[in-house]
Length: 398
Image (cartoon, rainbow, N blue to C red; front, top):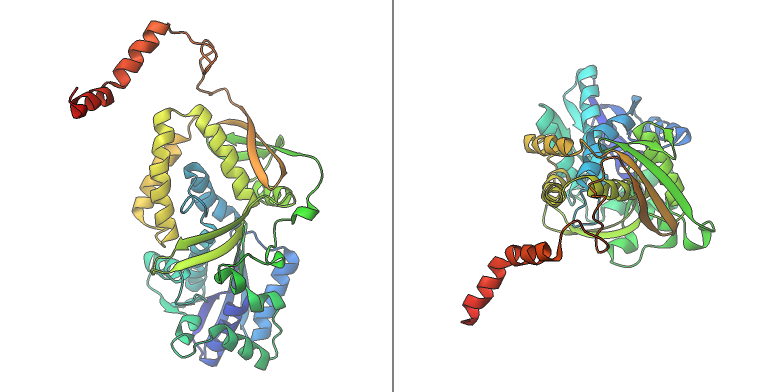
């Protein structure tokens, strides 16, 4: 009897090659498409057909859209985490994919798990460390193994697909594309060469010539830091993010090009689109800055950087990450209200905030009016700056 193996399958070039390779190794391949919200019904059907066409014994579809909202989007928004101030960790669906695949391994009675990560990027760490964090399984990585034998890996994969009579989309031969509820990442071709992404590289955001005329306004409602309504309609989190992606993407919001340091010591460059995440983060920050104290808002940056580093580097199930999230949850107690977002295309701004928890003084408005005297202001300036003033005198010999 053949050994069963669960392969995390997206339908792309790399995981398609993995099916062929694992079948040739003698495994009974069970492909698992963990739907994190980036594919419609037609797309899911296409992925299933591709898996079976490649030789999978059985294909499994697993819905994880709500899980990615609960386990990732919620703390992401609370922390405002972006690697190097830019990249909002769109790769984090990997952790939920692995977790669901391992649950399927347990159901099928196998300890064999496969993925399509290369040996050149961060995803291999995210996949492998998650496996090690969650249990005792044997990891199979056909693309990483292939790199020890072949120089031009992508060309080799394309040739294997061609020899097997499996069609590959033209864009797939140029780019590696990952799409989920969070957004889309694109790498390869001219992006790897530090040139501008081609117009057809973008899949989720409209070109300037296709933007609607006028202005778009969207109202986002929050309760204790979590988005719960869109334009007054109460919705589940994944549906809010889906609608934001569609609405803001049509106005060209959410395009980015990012260069970062991968864990293995190389520079990595990607283009990515995340109109919905950009909208959530902009709205939440405007609300949180309004209702939380100065010390809470200042400390958030330290938490954000630490949380982002753990998640980006593969430590999604590290206990320290849960410690940080406990603080973040506590800090959201009064982050309740509604924020209006506005765009005329490309750039998004939070233009209005309404909350009963706004930290404001009705008798004092910045630069307009105050409920303290000029003498009190002078005394405050003298005291708050005393250390700097004394240092200047001492060091100048005065």
